[in-house]
Length: 217
Image (cartoon, rainbow, N blue to C red; front, side):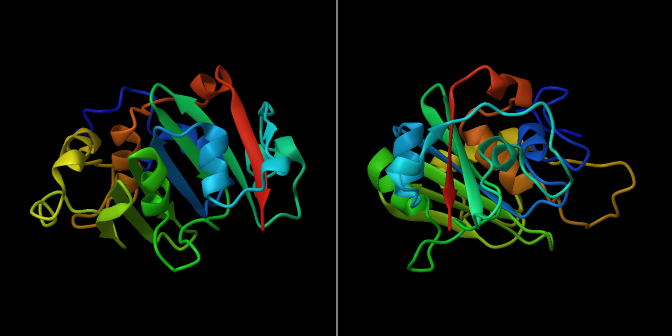
């Protein structure tokens, strides 16, 4: 499985970055954002979180059940449409939306553009319970790349912007044992997003940094 940007133990059995899998319910329907230049609280507010509802978050040891994300369990926000969890590693802030409510902004556009307008560079990726997926990349408020299926490093090569190419190469191609020839690489969009932001991490890495959470919807 040639995924050069990810060390052993940082991807799950489907090629998804393992820290995302470990944060999420068993059947995920989530969106992940990364942005350079914004703090976690600034990123949460840019995505619609109310400042007074943003709180420090300490993740529990495990999910209480198969339907509840770690951030939702930590905050007790069981009636919220989504719970957003944010942290910062290096220059990049990440936000995990456990229900995918932030997959599009109020204008029906990927929020990467809004995040990049304040932060400079941003990306967003969604993966649904039906295995639909997308990837958006934006710079200085302008959407530079957007696909609503699994990115194909070969077919999409001419449309991939220069600033995203190294991340695509680092994401590589995941070849799961028993994967049928031609079957989509379902984790590639989230791998590209994480490679862009240097998030080849594990859940234990996240537990070592300050985290912030907020309910949404």
